[in-house]
Image (cartoon, rainbow, N blue to C red; front, side, top):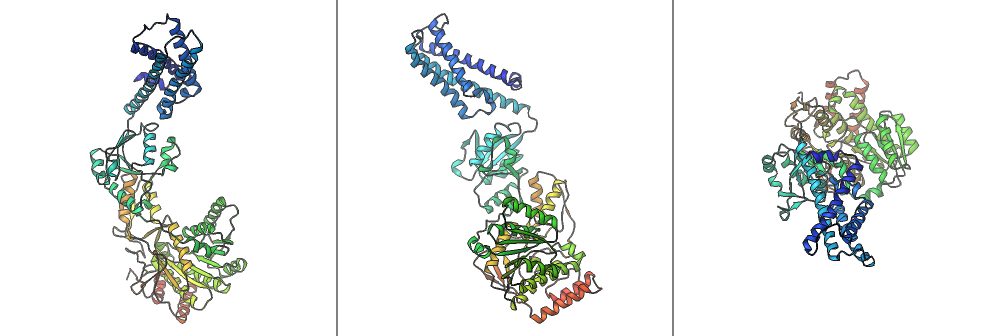
Length: 615
């Protein structure tokens, strides 16, 4: 063992010399065995015929191996192709020699002896290298102090590539205990020496019996709900879980760490991919001037990404915060240098600035995503929520009417339903504005209402990840709190699809799937990270609900052409009621009373479903 360890540390030239020497000895040994096997002559180098034949074939064989680059490869990483090259070289050279010796009388060794020796040479050379490779793995195994016991889920192509990599460059890190696969025909079958030892129902017991440290999830073509079910089973074990990327993303065996990733929340939600009518969206956007407010935000920036793909005449990106707007612009220009985009700094609160932008660019389609959305912050600064959300929306809506916008889409929230926060109530008032404006304008106004999106600014998921990375604790406001979640690209795709359905005054409601308990989500994220981190219950924040809703009691749903998009039946206030509501809010903003309680009183008058949790 020590000799083999020292061999790996030798200079390359010396290792090549030693391997060449061994191959030379193998050739000589092969002739000895072949002659002995035939039992028709004595093996002695005193016979010139034998000397000439053996030495000639030996030189030709070793030269061929050098020319083919066999000695440049590391034995530890030898593949089937390398072994075939070694074996074929011996047979081919022997065959060529047997043909050539007919013209040279001093090569008198029988042809059958030469061919038999060549076969032995091929076998002995390959066996020698397999033996050497096995010894190297044994050394790695014995010298490793912290090998992780690994279970792989899925017996597909990605798994085969992963196993080959683990058995070579990462043999010191992992011991592969077995493979899990739901296909009964694969049970007890082997993949590169690793056995399929059960299906998903055996994961928990196998992890316990075999002391599994890590699970690699390596199924590429699987429905999200099925993936979620298997991951939930894995969650019952003590093992950490890693996701293996699809085979086409596994570049080489030297970058396995780049081919695996941590479990993401998207994996745990089990959301099916949503199909959109892209032709209808393209007809809606292509060749049009499109304005997106809040273009640097989570929803606004994704709107810009997707809108550019549908080839608008011009995309006007508006935001008050220059940093995120600049980042969005650079990202889009990196993908398409000729993208027809214009970035504009401005506040939706500033009516004069809005008129300048509408007059200059004359947008035909408007997506209004600019808003203050953080519930606790708006409880502290309620007047800012009214200024930005209500009057900002009013400014953009009025400009859309004045400058002949064809369609206006307002981005709402599930927090507008039976609101318990200033932010939620302000969004509900915005919905009222949209419905009221639609009655007396040539512009088609609509709103799209949905819940939380993963990865957005202020979202709980990035907070959890940061807390886990920092060693905890992970803070949850309440053990029973639940939320709807949707992926940002998914939500934006449905917003665009909703806009194509709009005839005026609709409040579209997106199907958010099943609500998720935040405490359970935090537990799973901690578990999947492999860290021992506590969860701290910190209590509900001001204005925060335990359960989010997408509909009020008086609302019903109307189906649309898309199964994930419905229309709320809620009635809009009359024009006079809306004028009175706006006047009340204007007096509040311009008056001297700006306390949270003052704002709440006015909100209760305008939004009958407003619930004050502090009453």
